[in-house]
Length: 120
Image (cartoon, rainbow, N blue to C red; front, side, top):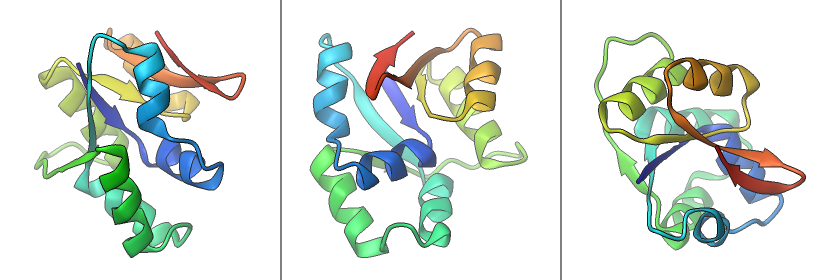
């Protein structure tokens, strides 16, 4: 399963020193591919919360592949949803609004519950 990760989940994992890949192995033992849209990557870099070179090292260690995705969708969240829908993916986010929108589209979610990632 393709898991498309939102910027807020990356920032949370970085801040709390959580290994996303390890937690994903617990909730998706049958296999997964971790992805982040380049637009999300730019969003994180612009936030200034993680230095770009450190971010790239973390993405590499977590096995997250950066995807270039062109779309006419407005906003990064809409692009995430569109990409997930087209590729039968799952959305991983801490954003309540993005989770709500994903559920309306019938997408699976990875979200934070009691400081652990959960699959829905």
